[in-house]
Image (cartoon, helix red, strand yellow):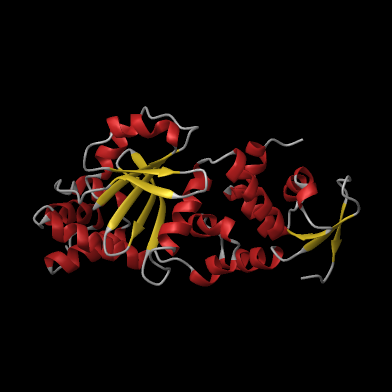
Length: 295
């Protein structure tokens, strides 16, 4: 029998792409684990939702907490029309777990009860170099250590038993100068060229090999507050969420729909496959029969 940790792999990129391509072997293995909680006729979507409910009780790992942030902050405070969310955003040698861009850039570094805090100090120092605000989202067991490790400007949020996000310490606006080297390495070519054009009035015309360094030199002349604002606005525009696709997925797959790269044709197939239904032959069997044409 699968453990909850193993079953949670249906929320991985590999698990999602398998369903998109019509490979239901693992999803039905997960259905077997939760057979007592599923109806006699159940859909692929039902399996994801049931597994997600079990995660709430047994295994609040990084994906689960990311999804809570997306649901309660991205959709709860803002909307897909006014904000965007970045996952695993490269910042120097680190990757920010979750960044929401609205009027400000706000980073949410996740430390679940299964995570080590060994790299936290270095991660936060990197994030403060480019983001307006930085928060650590963690569980009760890590709160005191996180408060001790984190700079005073870093916010601390607790994920409670009922998935309530409580701000233990507010995040302050970063007053650190933007580290242009770190910022440039985080951006795509079209993004840093757009920044330079907006803030400096022109784009360097030198050979491609020299443009990167020239752009860095130009951005170093820009006031940090203006650079932060333009960075937020530019990346929010270039990394938009596919609202139709994400909105069609169950809430348990909110952050998966935002984070994982899925071709357009596979997105359509995934949404269709979510509605495929299966019949349980009996509550105590692991044999399922697909109901063709059932939606």
